[in-house]
Image (cartoon, rainbow, N blue to C red; front, side, top):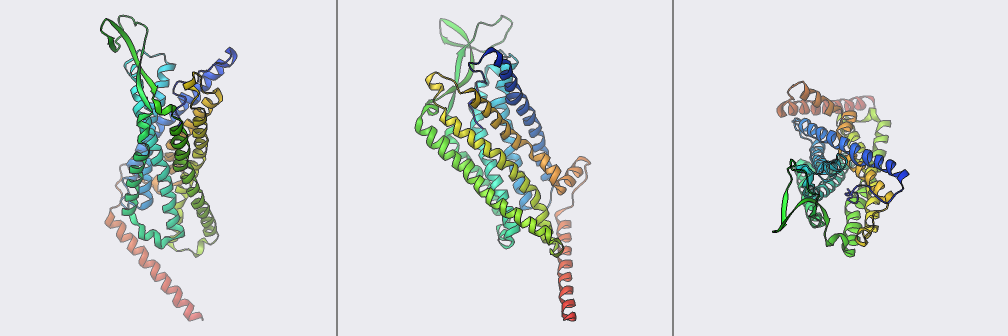
Length: 383
């Protein structure tokens, strides 16, 4: 997510354009991402609950659980970093306890959002890679296993934290004076001068990193765009092209496939759709980060971000929230097994145990082997 709309979309515009700009700010910057974030928090929490009930704990569901948890953290951070501060501005509730301290929310939620976003990006790459190995290289996928997949999730989270550590030093809480409130208002009083007590509000303040040219262009633009967007999008694009081609070929020869191959192909449809949505939203965010770095020096010179860039940033941030919130709907639309597990969860039905599933799998494999032997014997009889 970009952060150049932290102060809203207020720029030097004509009076005739001000109402339209305020409407855009309210819809795209506040209400739409706010509704999506609340829906996404509920949806990802339900997804975690439902996917955790699966006794099979397949590699695909394990990676989907990790993605749901990462998206949940991202959406909670977005609520604290963007939605709550903007809601304070629109509701003119600057004198409430939360709004007075909103600078703390923005400063410390921003690196959490970046960490969660990078984790979600590379978890999408992990999902695409796992499906590619399962469909296009099944023997290698068998050697990977769920344990190595869990190790990969841990490595992704650890690398995301390490890579985004500088984000903790980009902003700082800054106290700004407020007008003296009415006597019945309960505000935080900060006594900076022992002789004069002034009412203050904590807001988001830039540190020297935000104005450092090397940091902005080397880390925030070049390195961040390559690690978080360009390389993941390239990997996902290559794997998805191969997966789509394999799925199309398999559909034409569906009768000749065995039950294991059909099961893997059915399980591939949902991850492909999730990764496709990520690729679309990630491409928009990639351009937004580049534009943000280009215009990052303008506030330091006493200017403002261009209005069109603030509007683009609002759309880009909204798409990031949309990408994190929509996976629950994608699971409902394209995940047959997820719908069954959700129905079992809602109706408090127990899922089959691991032992029952193991017996069912062994029975299916035995039937498949018997079918293969029968086909071989039939061919020997004919020829």
